[in-house]
Length: 391
Image 1: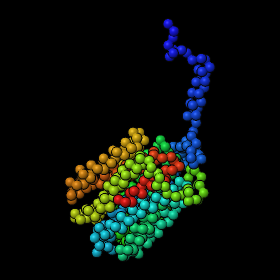
Image 2: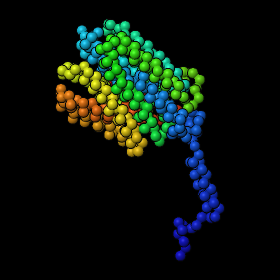
Image 3: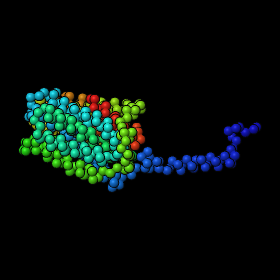
């Protein structure tokens, strides 16, 4: 009986050719890939320079995002002093403009980061941050606060938040969740320090010098950031083609869905951070307790960023983000809504919601980084967050 075709052995020459092809493929896969930026795409994943960048990003976010996390402190104080004749809704517009401009104007800072690196943007944002904090002390009318805090403050943060987060991804891949969580915890630490510091300074030296002291702290923070943050890739020439925003990134369905998820995620985070302090004041709590709750929110967020980042690298970034979003959801429905004026329950809510919301903040950009090349990360990240400005 003749052998079946499948049983016919290939000629020796064919076996040698097949083996040669397999060896070439294996050798190719083991070689580091050439990155779009012109550098090999093998990530340092550690070392003095890489961890120095993480510390520098931490300092930049400490000097900028801290005030977004401390909005409730300013709102509660202004409603009882300079802007006491205005409703909470009207005063809230100042901080709404601040948040909106932060993400809307970041639409441009992402492409500039991809082309030029982080240092120029962070330096510009640092100058504007110190400027608006110094000017806050002379504000006494509604439009003063809208111009200084809402517009100048929003512009300053828009220059910092995207490059300070995105630069970490240039040095880490497998440990990106943890590294980004550590860097983003700078904003959480500032959210602990500044409400308590401002509450004490408001009572001792007044509003003007309290904000000036905060400005001097930011000078030191940004100086350290610029000393430690170094771009990994050489800058590109400044041309409109290299720095223009690109809405075509929304051609990718995965980015559209992720951006919508980030939009609703940030919408949910905005309410407790902005209104928890004034909420507790309206329910009869002391100003000191109200400011303490904001610090507890950020204390929970500090650990949430680190822990969620660590586990995200183990079980998947999107998987961990689902866990933190659900945790935030149940903290609001299960703790805050039934709490009313119960101070113990409000403390528990601040810690639990802070923990899970901290994970949301640090994991969202890491998830976005999985949807694009490293060379386009700043563009994708800032464009996705542009939707957040509409909330």
